Length: 191
Image (cartoon, rainbow, N blue to C red; front, side, top):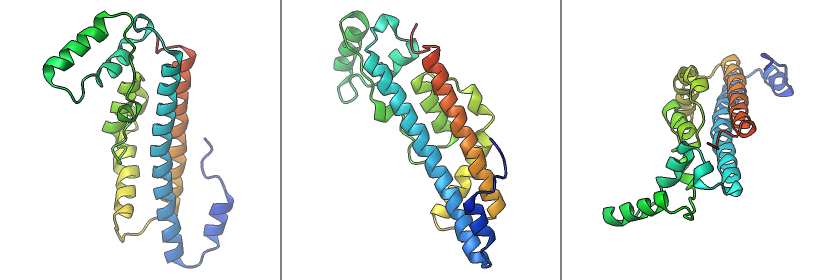
């Protein structure tokens, strides 16, 4: 991704003489960047799981990680004996249809920090290694700024920092998209 792009948005900010207006715009860039990051991860993960569900793979062709993700939802609101019977049936009956609880598997918990991202990646069967080195940015820069500004922190926001955050978020989104595309191309959802 090209850094320091001179967008029309940046030009309009450069024209602002009032530092308060620049501060509001910088905070908005950070808040919108986080919002797009969380929405993108949730949406693309949901589309991926919907695609796998559409394929209707038999259990013996599905990756063990995806089988585990399906089994988690079995008997969620039932007593232990009923849950165990249902799990036994799911594991032994070849005609048993597994299903994803997509909303639960990609729940960003209204705070897509690195731990929640890791959980979503594991739930969909993706590698977590690509994002391990990004955890400091996600938690200490993106999420901290988003939380501070969204919850009323009256601190100032530097516009150059906001643009750097937006650029890094775009890079993260591209990495996430590539991870999902590779999983589909390599059919990593299959054994």
